[in-house]
Image (cartoon, rainbow, N blue to C red; front, side, top):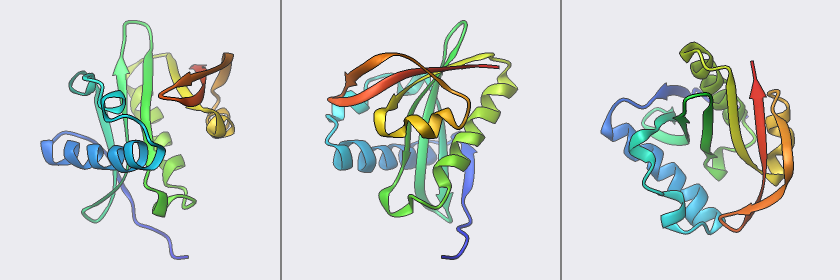
Length: 145
């Protein structure tokens, strides 16, 4: 398969935020059966959003929320038809680079259980037992720089 030309960015315009929301709706609400009110939880306007696009087509998205002592990475999503192309890895590396540039030293996330190895490959460590979030199995994971 040919190399996809994906552009990764921090969302700065409403049009791009809508694209990020589209990706999340397709991946989490439609694809994983998440309740709309669980995915769109009212915290989006206090978050920093990220978008991956091919041309004008939104293919990946994520958000982070900044707290006093850590950053929480959330809603990392790649549309099903674009998975297996390294887009998730490249998006996540872009996000981590952004976090490092902000000066934060600690990152946390709730990893869907089947993605545990994905996050471990980025240096995240599992803490605690398996738990349900949005009726999906997750692990709490952390990384310190």
